[in-house]
Image 1 (tube, rainbow, N blue to C red):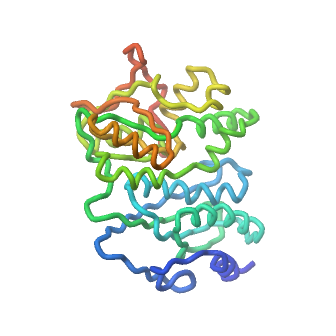
Image 2: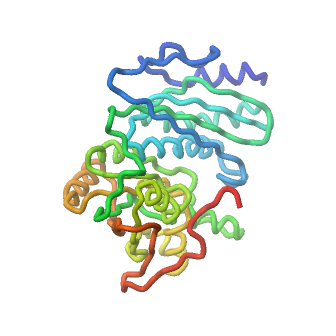
Length: 315
C-alpha cells in the first residue's frame, strides 16, 4: 500500500473535535486554542524490542504508544486535546495498521483526543507520538513544587509491568494479569486533573519509582524517604514473585505509568476524597524531607538498597 493510501486509511478512522480547524492531510494542522489555557506538549517514542516485546499484538502497541504519552499529560494535570503520530514501518501492512489503529483510537476516543497529523516512513518498527493538552494558566502540576513535610503518594499498584518483562526475558510464560499491565497501561488523566490545587508536585512512573521520584527531588531541591514495604502490589505480582523480588520490581521496575505526587500532610482527607471521586487506589509511601536524594527503608526502619534505581536509556 503506497504511503498516501496509508495516510488516507488513518484519516478515515480518526475522530476530530470542534477546535480542529484543519487536521490530517495538509502540511500541518490548524488548532484553535481556548482563552486562558496553556498548551502542554509531550512526546514519547516506542521501539520494538525496547519498549515492547517483539510479537506484541498491533492493537496493544497502538494502545501503549498513546497511553505513555497521555500519562505525561496526567502528571501535568492537563486535559488531552490533540495528538500526532509518526510511524516507521518495515513494510506496508494494512492488517497490522488496522490492528494498531484499533488500540490507538480506542484509547483516543476514551479521552476525547483527536489525531491531527503525523508522518509515515519505511524503517525498523518505531512509533513516535506527540500529545497536546490544555491546562489553566498557573494550574499545571510540576516536578519542582515538592516541599519538606509533604506526604508522598502513588496511584494504583507498582511492579506488574516489570514483572511481565522479567518473565518474558527469562523465556517463561507471562502471567496474563501482569502482561495486561505491560501492554495496556492506564493513564491517570482524571486523577492528575483533580489534583490541581492540592498536590505540590507530580511525575508519572515510567523508569522506576525511585528513579522518577529522584527527578522530583532534584527539581525541588529536597530529599525523600520511602517505605518500600508500603509500596502497593497487585495480587498477581505477589502470587508470581517472592517478597524480595516484588520489592525490587515495585521500587525500580518502571513501565507502571502510575502517578507519584506529593501533597501537604494536612491534605490527606482531600487526597482521599479525590481518589474516591475518580475511582483510583492511592497509597501513602513516604515523605519529603530537607536534603537531597531518595532514601529507601523497610517498615522496621532498616535501610533498603536496590540493585539499581531504575531504567537508564543510555549506559
